[in-house]
Image (tube, rainbow over all chains, first blue to last red; front, side):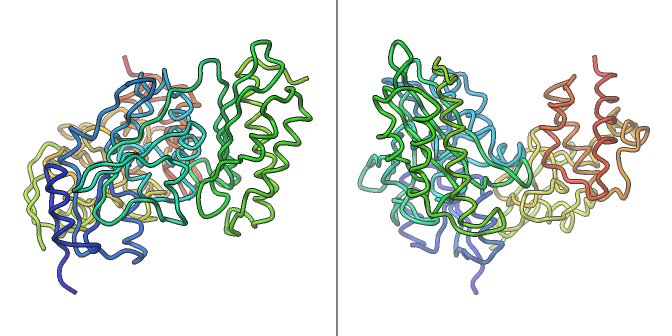
Length: 293
Length: 155
């Protein structure tokens, strides 16, 4: 096998030149925490590594714009966790990032890398789904925005095509007065992937008695992260009560398709998805000012 | 194809030619003979290979050297200054913060990063920070006591 090559483009245009040169055998590398593990397992054997480190100036910033937060693809996890802009406008996302692996990984891993990795067990994507984020993807011919709901295609597969690179994630600010929660079931160790994880965003009516809007997304429950739309629809307009939460959470059993692995059987994860959805909703309702007697 | 990189490790400059997928832990241990850093799980989970990259702790087993070209690395060998141990190192000795010692370089480097960022951590902060450094002798209480003792002498 020929020796692996390495290039450090200093502009997006040079990234596209590298794509032209290496084709699908050239792999982008940002922090490398995802790719290196895939290479160690011999699942990926690139002919060339195309490092993005020289683009961290342009793609490593967080800005607040037009009611959204724009996160550059090369923003590092801990940079996001500490960002005042993120904490102010999308604290749910900051909360989920605090659950990713360990500080050692969060000091290296980038948000664009996490997106392009397409691993259904990661923590942040549930919050992107619950907040209707948009992924900006660039190619030689320009850039396109893909709604996060259309971004994840299958296990480790995303909407990113050959010749394309993720440049930004645009997350709308959390709705005013919304209560949010991100919770993660960890029966093994605190730094593990979740057995199931749930993000919930709840907006209540002015008198806090009814659900105005509800967004629920889950991770580790199938080949991609999912939105629990049946549960959301069931709650919208309904009275806030333990019974309404319970009946909505029950619908999640039909929405998930978990794999059996060391973190539990598919059946167990399905049951836990229901339980943890109810708990996430309870927390979000209380944070939104609702009462559950 | 070997790629030339330069690293500042423990205050000293090193120039090496490395393959693009040569990992920092292998560069340290095998190319430069800095064997204080250990490798155990090799997938970024156990913490044995913890080093500081510009002062922030990272897993050297997941990090290709080419990605840290030009940056500053601190390993366990770089903690003591002029043969004098840091308080955190002395505390691990005084409080029995290790048994077999295999995880100790990673533990000490992680603890140093903690005390640099939070000079007086609570017990919960210590547990949260050190959660990713696994000790198979399960000496966790002694490790927490060692860190608390080192924090106590911080200004």
